[in-house]
Length: 332
Image (cartoon, rainbow, N blue to C red; front, side, top):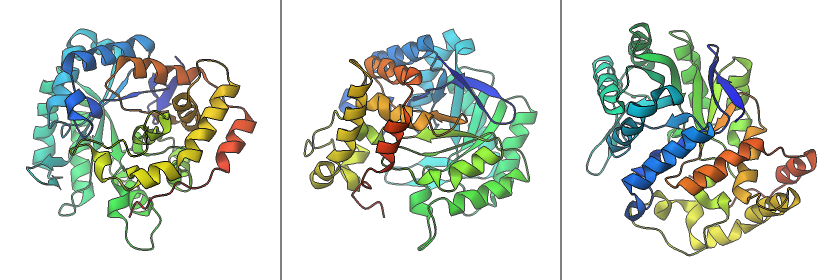
């Protein structure tokens, strides 16, 4: 698989990563099977999709434990990205950016992952009660201690943190400017897909101009852009899509032209090319510093996603995707 680099330290990873959250958290709990997920991780590593993206809150903790079973055998094949800063309660999630907590959480993640070092340690959310410089300083100490190789900032929650009238990633960029004064940012993780392209306006250029890697979260639109979901099919109560405004039956039907365009382009590239692969190829085409991290828990989807690294979209394809109607369904 093509290799791409993350950050000024040029950490090399496969062009398509693996989002591990669905194996333990937020999606169809009835289909979460440990053995199947382990096979998916092994398959990703076999194919060169070495960036494994997880977080201590996924489960909580069980996702890191699962990956630890693989890393115990194949640490040299993997690039491990995990996150810190969110605590999961019975009915709520809260941020914790206290330096002491960050240090303890890192040690706990290292134990669960069965490794001596985390390749990329990301701040999942900034704690509004703690200056972000204090949190980032504690994370920088972990790099100097040899427990972490590089630091990143996760901006997936930017929508909920946005002030009225502000652009989507304004707050994230302000945070990035602040922490850059403390210790270099190697990567930013934020949503980017055909139906959620907002990062192209400000956040992606910010990263490109500073040599910062960009991890594209939800590049398949929480599964919608694969074309495998049926409008009105319903979701299990704990599945995040059950409360997602774009996954009502009405909005899923209204956004079908986006999937239709992906399928048309896939057909032009020959038998076996899928809508999901076109969606990932679009993300890859946004810059050499961009690495999509599609989430899955199934080996067959890992294989399909990895195949997107070899798909090159023509200008005609990209032009067709640029003029797609905006996705319907409010995010506010």
